[in-house]
Length: 282
Ligand SMILES: Nc1ncnc2c1ncn2[C@@H]1O[C@H](COP(=O)(O)OP(=O)(O)O)[C@@H](O)[C@H]1O
Ligand SMILES: Cc1cn([C@H]2C[C@H](O)[C@@H](COP(=O)(O)O)O2)c(=O)[nH]c1=O
Image 1 (cartoon, rainbow, N blue to C red):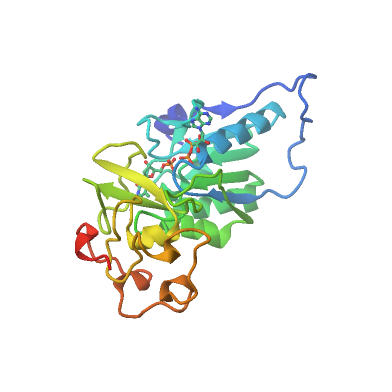
Image 2 (cartoon, rainbow, N blue to C red):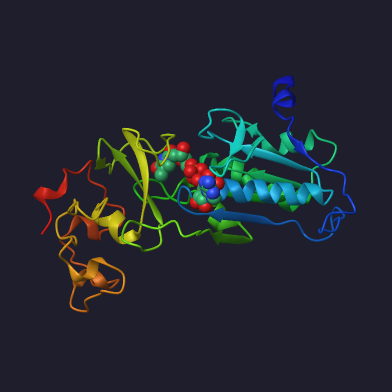
């Protein structure tokens, strides 16, 4: 273990258990270790839950490490929009997580925020830590990017985790449906191509992210007033465009009934930053 890694690896969480706690102390190795992945769109409370879980494990006398990569704050920390924060180990490219953890005396659990940005190799190392070292791993992150394509690390977590859990704290699309996917909005237009990783927020920056339901992520409609940005997609006038207003006759209402000719009908087809949809809405 290099000196540099040891320097990074300070944030070991542990608190003496006190009588006033409602939570019982938990002995190390009380059960099989687990790999859990909590996912959801931006702003759905992933980092908040990560910090809460760290707090609870630590106050039950367990020793944990908090890891992150590319937190919006720019520092090696986990920050939540609700105002909580905690120093963390930055998971640099090439950091060996097994070596990191085994350089400590004893670690019961890991909190891994922004796990979607880790390498696939690092996800394998997390599984090794669970299976061979009895360390509980709680990973948090986006499942998919702005194109609705899975991050490689998230995909590996879906494949390997003992449990995956979709978080939803009523982060809604503008239409009222549950927010599921993140749009990247560049100069007011939804991007369909670009770098997979661009750190940002859901504020009103020139490059920002917006949480949408699947329907409006696919059609590219960013608000009630804007028409869809893809040919053949639903627009404001369509009865199928609001929850509870589904029109049985509309081809877009049913999985498997989509019109093959429409680019938006084919998952995985992302044809560039589309023109604002005045040109394309029906
Ligand atoms: N002032 C506030 N009061 C209550 N909850 C808040 C406040 N600010 C933010 N939140 C909560 O924090 C959530 C975002 O949490 P955060 O952990 O930053 O999300 P994520 O890591 O998934 O992007 C929001 O959905 C909201 O529930
Ligand atoms: C969709 C998407 C997001 N990102 C970045 C933007 C933010 O910095 C993080 C997500 O943070 P949060 O804790 O979930 O709010 O991911 C990205 O780089 N690429 C994308 O496609």
